Length: 105
Image (cartoon, rainbow, N blue to C red; front, side, top):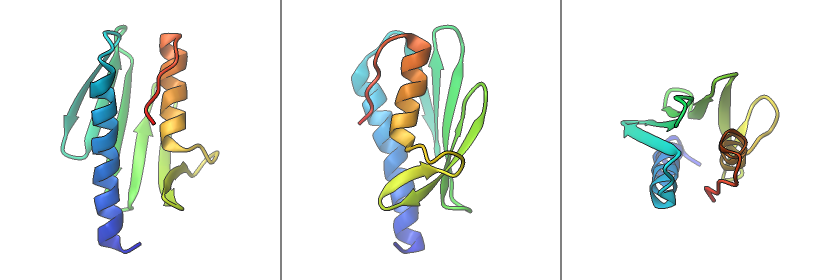
C-alpha cells in the first residue's frame, strides 16, 4: 500500500469502530470522536483511546493498564507487542470490563 492508501485506511478504521460502537446502542459504553481519535468510556469512568498516528502510519490504543501500537499487516492492524489484532483485542478488553460479549467486527 502507498502512504496515501495507508492513511485512508487509518481513517476508515476509526470511522468503522465509531460506526460499530454507535450501532451497539449499549448503555454501559459511551464514546466521543474527534479528528483521528475515538474515546470509549465505561460507566465507571474507565477510558480506552483509539487514535490515528499519521506520522508513523499506526493506530495506538491506550487502556488503563497499557498502551499498544498497531501496524498494518496484510490488511489488518496487528500490535507490535504480542501480535493482537485491533478489533479482536478491543473486543476482548471491553468484554472483560463489561462482563458480556462485545462485538466490533
